[in-house]
Length: 189
Image 1: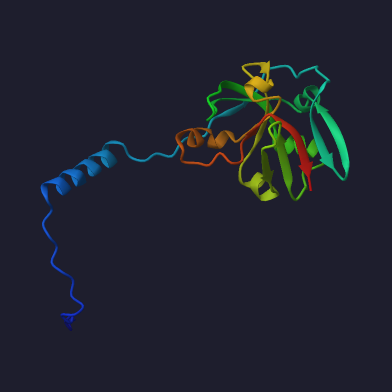
Image 2: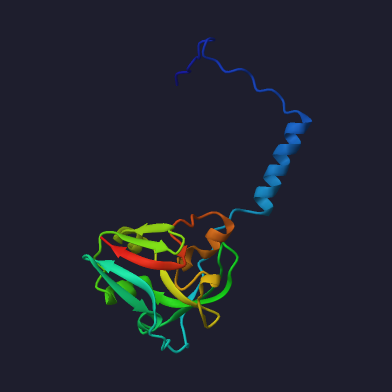
């Protein structure tokens, strides 16, 4: 077996012994990692809701497609079948959110093949979703909190959430950039 020799110009300096401060910091870091290992936040569980669909036919948002504007009511949205999830919204709202799967809503509006969707809130904040975004994660279009219709004071009239990311968003390990509340319009392009 051949032994490699390292020329003196390339040799590494001998390691210095750790100071007591450095060894204390290293020991503390190891303790924290072993005592509190990183965890993956579990997804919030979505279940079918026993809530009856709303009978309120007043428009709560509008859908824009092919140069047309279509008003959509809470009753129309909820007629697709409600699902519920308990979670703490990262803005502080907590409880049992009920709504419909976004993909089912889009299919009912004949927008499931739209190459890009723009959700616009009452404060003009926007979120864009592509089919790839929707294939990656399921979005819930919430219309209620603890059985009551969402209002502007409770981030309504509709709120888009990603239940599988709820806990990760709350702890800061997942982005909340696809969540939007107080939705007034959906534009399909």
